Image (cartoon, rainbow, N blue to C red; front, side):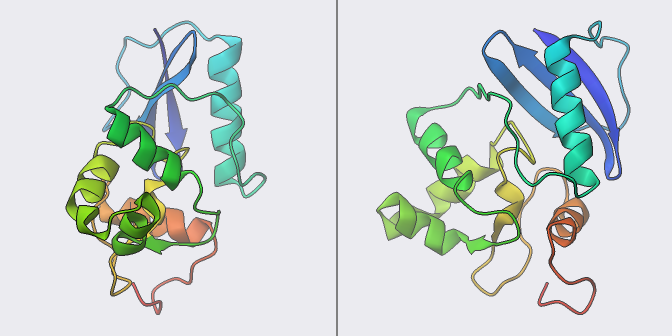
Amino acid sequence: MDKAFYNSPLGWIEICTNTNGVTHIYFVEKPQKTASKGTAFLDLVVKQLDNYFTHNHKTFSFPLDPSGTEFQLAVWKLLDQIPHGTTLPYLKMAQKSGDIKKVRAIANAIAKNPILIAIPCHRVIGSDRSLVGYSGGLERKRKLLELEGFPKQNSLF
């Protein structure tokens, strides 16, 4: 497993990869000394994250290799279908999964997303359009949505 740290506009991000793709992208307080020597693949991931934060790119083309249950993987695949610049309530996510009664299960799967930003769980909001739940923190969620085109302070958030 290779590891890199990226100093994003929203704080430090740890990136972990294996031979199949990115396994983790998450926010950390500060980089650790256990980063790997740079690889071409880690450089590509960092470059695409940099392009995302500077509005030069809206999607990611690097392969993903998250670990999770079959249900979690299915939910994370649904997250990937939410277009850049849009949001979807948890209830709609449950409808898309085929069972409206699975809202809590959907929310739990979203909370366990190991690849923040690239699997865009920040695009899922409450039914009342409120910002709820984000392992990177609600302020980062707000800033990610603003980066993707949502209005600042006077928005419905």
